[in-house]
Image 1: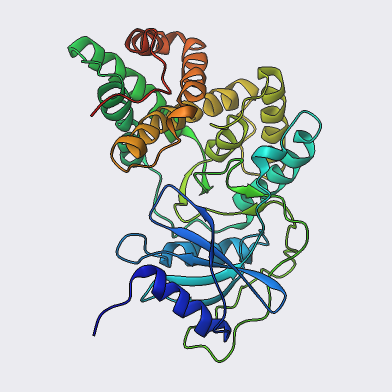
Image 2 (image 1 turned 45 degrees about the vertical axis):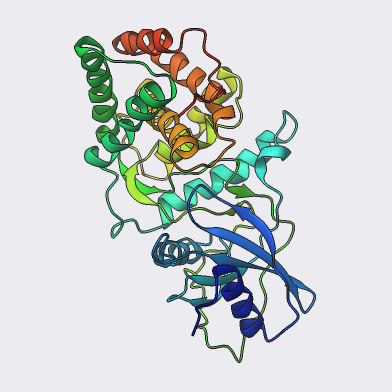
Length: 362
């Protein structure tokens, strides 16, 4: 008997799960992985089918981490039905109002205020004890993506021994700073394309008469659900440096804010962490700012490599257009630390006058 293709299988599953043989599916969104999202309407309500092929993108981490976040009162998509063997998950539709297009000078303080409230909730109320560590080995593997995919594949820059020594010295400094920081839950992609403005609580009744498994969403006693932001793409969460998600949000790869404004948000959040007991009294403004800068630099160096790998290896077009912004972050931060001046100079030499958004031939 012929096995149905993926499109047929997911359509059959959603029709069976919701008991409506006339349902159709339309693309809702896709991400940088093999996971995809599909929208349908049933009984006057919008639903999302998450298609996460287990052999390529096991849905188990998404489900487990989503449960942790929901238990702490974060607004993640409620799960209504799961077929773990085929990788189909029926979830709440949080809508399509991403933070990114809504952010401007008039809205940013309110939207980031909600996001920072959610971040503090994640860092104080979500147990990260059983998550894999975002340790030196993991952070280094990410950093190595930059010389391989950005310098090598995208720019065609050949590194000599002195260049490699300069890169290694910079990586060592960044890793040492990361390992100084308190550890907590780290979303790892907490930014404007993974945060949504949710108009009203969504979700619907758990599907009945389905061969799938209904999944209750636990909630800590007294942890009222935060209405906004809706949070997605959390399946890669780890236990790691406390300033990582703050840097992801405030030095977003997709939007830039004035330095003074960012520094003000960082200092306000440092004080909130102190009040919450997550930072020692000895972590002053300068030390926390250094943590923020250098873990943000780790992220942006990694992203330079990831965006190039997504284009050249995975055929996911559209990411190179964001390289100039990310490269500018890297140069700006590296120039602010004398120990990283050699890294900034090396990157500027390799880039030269190149248009970073232009791909090179295979």
